[in-house]
Every structure is written in structure tokens, then in C-alpha cells.
Amino acid sequence: MTQNALSVTCDFDSGNIVVLDASNPQNVQLAIRPDTRSAHFQWFHFKVDGMQVGEPHAFSLTNASESSYNRAWTGYNAAASYDQKTWFRVPSEFDGKALNFALSSEQPQIWFAYFEPYSRQRHDWLVDQALHHAGTQLLATGSSCEGRSLALLRKGDGAPGKRKIWIIAQQHPGEHMAEWFMEGVIERLQENDAQLQALLASADLYLVPHMNPDGSFHGHLRTNAQGQDLNRAWQDSTPELSPEVSFVKEQMEKYGVDLFLDVHGDEEIPYVFTAACEGNPGYTDKQMALEDDFRTRLSGLTVDFQTRFGYPKAQPGKANMNLACNSVGERYKCLSLTLEMPFKDNDDAPDLVTGWSGKRSKQLARDVLSVMGQMVCVLR
Image (cartoon, rainbow, N blue to C red; front, side, top):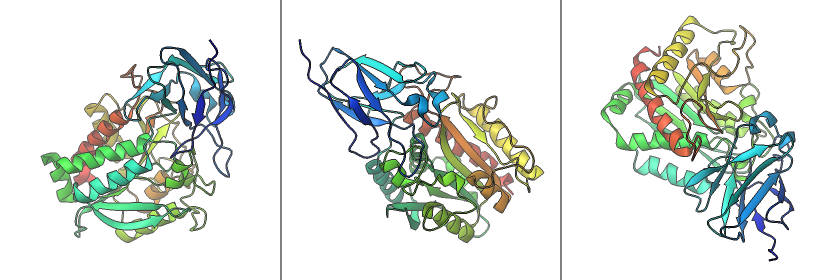
């Protein structure tokens, strides 16, 4: 029986794919589009229509070996969903050139993505939840290169003497697990349990749920609409090229920082871990002790965090000061961490159906808030 060519599209929020040849449903040839004004690429997100239920369909991302983190494809499985709500992993294979995956479809249409996407529509819903159900206030609003809003939310009254805890997410737009993490923060604020109340008695939370809305909308991996990697712009940000960073830095100067957490995703390492600012020229013993304390407490609280695997430590005085973690840690001499979650899975506690997921990102956020509550009185 002759099969019709599939319809493969990405003309939607965070969509990214180039169709090379969709004439054979058992050998659909695709490529990932680079970021605007940047050579980076890795994120993909596309919809397939016209699938024959029960019949095998196969897809090949032909330029995977040329992507920004080509070693990351080994051990990686693509995410898929029939309804954009429930996501599961599809067994995938990297052959040294292409990432290949196949399935017998249960529905005529399906979405594939590098990770479970967090849409702009859901972001708007999350901000509304934060404002109307979690007791936060919209403290300030920034603007991206293309005019999309950046919300700075505060949970707390800004009273003198309270610690200022900052959490920002998704500087790298393809790292959608970061805003799932922020949803976990907002959910726990809504519940307002006793442990959280104790934290908020001593600290205010300053939250930027999404730092790079332009990049996410366009299906980028690393950069904003001007081709800037925001997490390489914390010393030389400009209102023209990186207004997102300039806005947050301005607000930090206004309110102060006692703890900073920058939430990310890592393509290669199948674990959750933190990176710190040990390479900073002004790194202190107090910062080192706080970093060790945070890691010890979080690894004792959840199997989803560990300290064995991560990035190599920077040598003293050799830190890249354009990274948010290093820049903020140096400026405010505070506990300053980058939190990394995997695109793959957590090999310490694998989930064969979902891999690392939005749900697990949200739970990690709840556990991080518990650790912050335990540490709030020793931050300074």
C-alpha cells in the first residue's frame, strides 16, 4: 500500500526543525535549525500529522553530530507526546552522524521534543498563579530584545533585615526543565506549609521564572534574539544585546542578594548537580562552607541530587566572571550556585518511561526550598 508523506511542522512556540524529506514515513529525514545569529543548535520540537496508527514510523535528525553538544546524544532518548500533556521517551540511537528514533504510533499526530517543553502560554498561567494564588507581587517587569516581558516576582514584604533569596531560570532557552522547576517553587508557595512559613519569616524570595522568552519562542538552545548567550553576559551586558541580564542586575543592585540560584539543564551529564564560584578572585571560606552545607543537605534529602559528578572545579582566580553564578557570588559575597538538571535521566534513579521530566524538576524545587529553609539563618 502506498503511504502519503507525513506533515512535519514547527510553526509554533519553541518549534524547531527543518524538513529534508518526509516522503517515506519509515525514513523521515530532518535537521535541527541553528539559533538566530548564532551557530548553536541542539533543541528540537516538531509536530507530525498523518501517522498511520499501528504502523512503524522512523525519524532521523541528520545533523546531530554537528550540534553544540554532539557527545550528549549518546544515551539520550527523545521525548514525545500525543497530547502535549503526557510526555514519554522514545528509544533513540546516535550512529555518529544522526540521532535516530522510531515508534508505532497510537494516534495520527504526535509531538517530539528534546525535552518536555514549557510553553509561553503556560508561563503566563504560572505568573498568574504566583500573583493570585501564591501571594507574590509583581515587583518589576523587564523587557526582552523583542519586547516580551520578564517578570520579577517577590514573595515577602521587603522588611529590613530579611535575607534576599534569588532564583532565576532558563537563561538558556532550550533548558525547559528550568521553568518546570520554577513551577515547583510556585506550587509550594501556594501550599504555604509550616517549613516554608519559617523560611519566609526570615527571607524574601525574588523569582524570575523565565530569563530568555525570545530564545524559547524561536526554538533556540543557548541564545536570545540577538544571538547572545545570557549566561556569558553578566560582566558586559548591554540594554541593546542582553537587556534581560541588564534588567536583573539592576534589580539586584536595588534590593541586594544573600543567596543566588541560577537554574539550568545539562545536555551531557545524566545527574543533578551544582556548580559554584570557587574560581572567583574574591572567593571566601564562608562561601565554600555554605556551598558544602547546601550540597550535603540536598543530597541527604533526595536521591535526585548528588555530588560525585559535575563540572571540573575552576582553579583559584580562573573563574569565567561572565557567568551569572560567578558574577553574583563575587559582587555580593553570597552563596551563589548554578543548579543543573539532565536532559537525559538521573542515572542514580532512572525512570525508563519519562527520563528526567517536568514533574521531577518540580519536586526538586520543593526539596531545594526545604534546604533553603534549613540554611536561611546561616547565610550571613
